[in-house]
Length: 532
Image 1 (spheres, one colour):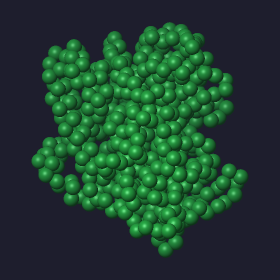
Image 2 (cartoon, helix red, strand yellow):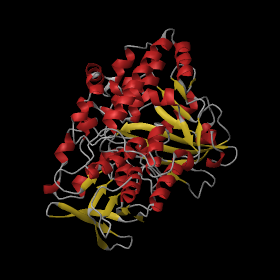
Image 3 (tube, helix red, strand yellow):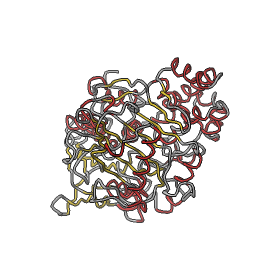
Image 4 (spheres, one colour):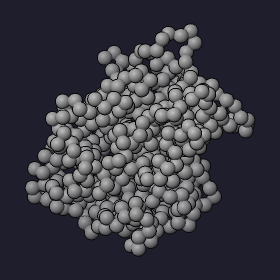
C-alpha cells in the first residue's frame, strides 16, 4: 500500500481511540500508509471485547471472553495480506468437525457438518426434500455473499454510483425483496422442520438482531458456516488479537494502555487530537492530524465531543435498536464432557418468546428477561491448553435485553448482581438437563460472570449492548451511518457501531474503509493486496 498524500518531511500523526479489533487493525493500516500512530486504550489490555481470561484461583484455565466463531476467512486473510503476510503465516487454523452441535428442545442433539455436500445430506436426513431446497438456498446465499463483498461491505458509501452498477441493476428486483423481506419469512417459506429453520435463522443473533427484523439478504451468513466451514484459531481469538497487535507494533504503532480519552480536541472545526487521563491521573493533550475512534459511536459522539459538534446526538440514538445484551458465564468443569462439541447451540421450542424477551421487554414466560436459546463454547474439545488435564472450559452466552439495569457479573467485582447470577444459574441448569450432564453443577470448579453493566462500564457500550447495533434494514449498509464526522473534519470512525457492521470481519473491513476514506477512494471492493 502506498500513501496518496503529498510527501512531507514529518509523517502525519494519527491517534486511534481504543485498542479493540478495529483499533488494532486501523492503527496497523494507518502506519502502513505512513502515519505516526498512537493508540490510546483505557484498560490495561488490547483486544477490547475480544478478550481472554485467566484467574489465579483456577490455574490452567483460559477463556475467550468475546468472539469465538472464526467465519469469513477471506476477510482475515485479506487484512493480513494488506500488511504483507497471511492468515496461514500468522495463525494456526483447524477445521471443526462437526461445525457445531445443536440441542433442539424435545429432540435429540444433531451435529451440523461443514461443506455443501454434507450440509445438503444432513438437511435431507431431517426433512425429505430439504436437501434440494438447501441447494437452492445456498446458491442464493453465495450470490448474496459475493455481491455484498463486491458492493456493500468494502465501501464508505460516499459515492452511491457503485450501487447502480450493472451487477446490482440486474439483481435489483431480487435484492429489493431480500432487503425488505425478513430472514424468518425467507427461511420459513422454504423449510418446514423447526430445527432446520432455527439453524438457518440463528445467524441473526450474530448480527445482534432477531430473525423477524433481519433482512433476508443476510441469509448470506449460511454460506459462511455451511459452505466455507467453521475453523478454530489455536489459542482462541486471543491468538488472533495477538497477531493484530504484533503486526501493529511491527509497523511502529505506539500503544498507551490504562490511558482514558476524556475528549476529542478541536480547533476551527477540525480534530486536533485527544485529551487523556494518564495512569497517574494527570491530564495530557495528545496532538494529531487525524483522529480515528474505534470506541462505541454513542460514547464518541455524546461523551467526547461538545453538543455543537455531534453528528449523531442523543436524539439520533433514541430511535435506534441497540441489539442484544448478553450474560456471559465462564465455567471450569472437572472431568470431561463428551456430550458437548466445540460449538453448541441450545434452541428452545419457544423461539419467538426468546426473542420477544430480549427485544420487547419483560415477558411472563421469561421472568428473568433472558433467552432460553443459548450458546455454549467448549474449546477444550479441540485444544488441550485451555484447561487442566481432565477438565473442560465452558463459555456460555445468554442473550438478554441491552440494558444496564440487569447489573454486573462477578468477574470485575466481588459478586455479581442477583439477576445476572440467576440467569447464569438457569443456564447451568439448562445445560445440565439438555446435554444430560446430571452432576454438572457439582463438577464446577471455577465460575465467573459478566453482565450488561460490565459492557457499559468497561467498553462504554451503548445501553450495555454486547455486540453492537442490530442489523435491521434501517441500520444496514449506508443507513447505518457514516464512518466520518459530519461536523468535525479529520475525525473518523471504525468498529462494530459504524459501517459495515458487527463482528470481527466487519471490524477489519471498517478499518480498511477508514483508509479508503482518507485516500478519497469511493470505489466498492477491497483494496489491492501487497504484491498484487
